Image 1 (tube, one colour):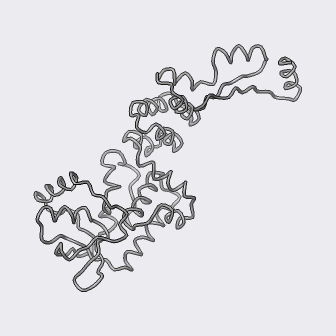
Image 2 (cartoon, rainbow, N blue to C red):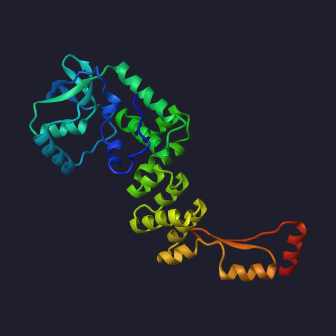
Length: 288
């Protein structure tokens, strides 16, 4: 099975998580594409997607009228002359809107589909896959093999939260996906950016600052906490990322030891450092 490339995850990234399989996964030089009447196809009863956007279907139907069905559907036989769709339900529905009588399809046996599913699971388990590549394979298992994320987690031997958090990386803005794919930011940075979903401006600002200022994951998380705490001004939110303020400097001078402030979504923590028990006793005595 061909591997998902490590590069090129920016522009055209959506092609990796399309509604249908990547041709490189399904097609081999020995595969035969057959024309199957649209009325001999039926959707899979296990298809997780129940709603198809009418506008998007109309647009796809228009494209099919002009260019035909570029990528073949994948089906499996259930009885004489009737097939269940495995991949390509959107194209099948749009083809009917376009007035097509037949659609190109590859016929797969249940055994072949099982082998493909196993290959995808093995692919996710590879240690050299980037977080985004893992997310792509997990999403394919979910969309194309009708597996819930909980089922996928069990098969992978991972916690449900791990699988769900990995898939969430696909919701990153394109620039952040590029940065993650090229190791300019870490997965922890990416999760901090995701926490600001719906705030495009601050997501872009946080990404830029992480790369230009070398912010740690903790600093990125403190910025997010400040924003969620209601600090609307980006500059002020940035200031709250710093663990040192004029107040902590005064306290540090009076106590004779480093003092830092850690902001959280609700308030924060004041941290007073000490090296020995004797130093701690001295600090406590000052408070007395």
